Amino acid sequence: GPSGVGKGTLLEHLMKVMPQFTFSVSHTTRAPRPGEEDGVHYNFSTVEKVKAMISNGEFLEWAEVHGNYYGTSLEGLRGKGVTVLDIDVQGVKNVKRAVAEGRLAGANYVFIRPVNVAVLEERLRGRGTETEEKILLRVANATGELEYGEEAGNFDVIITNNDLNKAKMEIVEVVKSLYRL
Ligand SMILES: Nc1ncnc2c1ncn2[C@@H]1O[C@H](COP(=O)(O)OP(=O)(O)OP(=O)(O)O)[C@@H](O)[C@H]1O
Image (tube, rainbow, N blue to C red; front, side, top):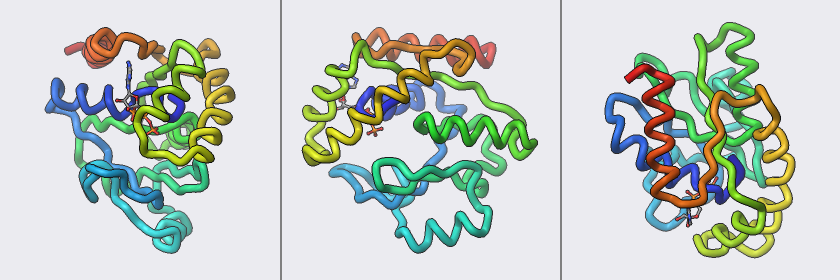
């Protein structure tokens, strides 16, 4: 889902409830936000290093989003069983390509949507981690992402993150049903 919709919040909850799954720690070139730990929330890296990893084919998927690079390294997934990726629409398209090309066995796709774009903007402001310019860029990108996410057939499941507790319960139920747990 788009930036600010609550992916990080919902996935933190999911990982607590489903300890048998592994959270895939992405590489990123963006600066850590307060409270974010290297190797836990992200592998914080430099543009130079990430570009080198891209040329070496080390990523399952990577994307340049809002001026920063994000990527899932193949090495980070190896031998981990079911891994959970916190990725945006570009990332999803790239994972789908990897599955189509046989570089990944398969994946389930869950889209998190807000009630509307105004709510996203409110949450990004409330989070207090983004400059005004970055908030506006994220909100501008959200419209296209919502169109793709809500189009029939693009995702296995769509969850609306309005009431947070309801959305938390929903994501757990969805995952349980997708993996027959
Ligand atoms: N249902 C909700 N109701 C109100 N606030 C929420 C809800 N879900 C998340 N938030 C808040 O909205 C903000 C954005 O959530 P979060 O950081 O999880 O989004 P994200 O999708 O991971 O964003 P990004 O892709 O930029 O990392 C946070 O401050 C979070 O506490």
